[in-house]
Length: 204
Image 1 (tube, rainbow, N blue to C red):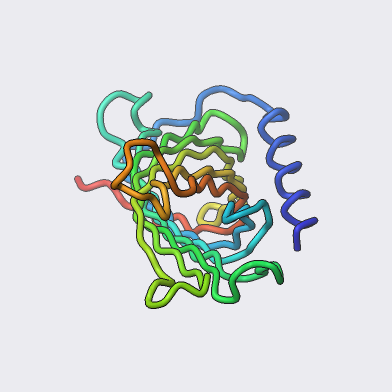
Image 2 (image 1 turned 30 degrees about the vertical axis):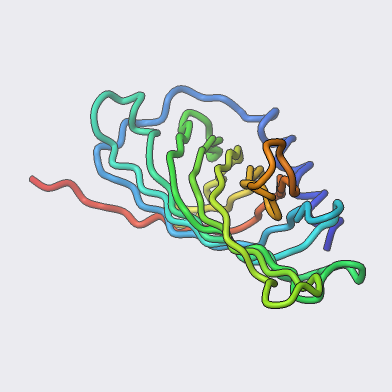
């Protein structure tokens, strides 16, 4: 499974560098809505570096309002559950679930390819069994940034390859001392998936 995500990351890097650039895409007056799902491979960054897998779902909405250069600006809602592929030296119930939303900007000036960048605020749940009585679950707020590319297969269907890094608040922090304690989580990984473009018609 790990090799698949390495290949996916290489594909993403090659795609970003090899866009066959054309003239700007035709201006779209109608709003655009994308609904997608895929599989993610993430470095969970919990007392070590290792890859876990899980499912991801997202919804992107582009209102296409204002000047043409703003038509690539939209909002994204995303949820992810990283819960498979735990190493044997990690807690048997280790899982990281995140969900939230933020801004996304997609450049639609390339033939079939639309690179994007996004920034999100999210809420996270983490499960862990460290043998601490009555404490095997916690929640944290986080922010995340990512880049990727959408590739159009047809009028309605696209595929996505993207990279994201998350910045969690500290876990196991002792607030009674002035110096920071605990651990800092910086999970990061690649998502590969497909999305459906819901088209809206103009109102006359």
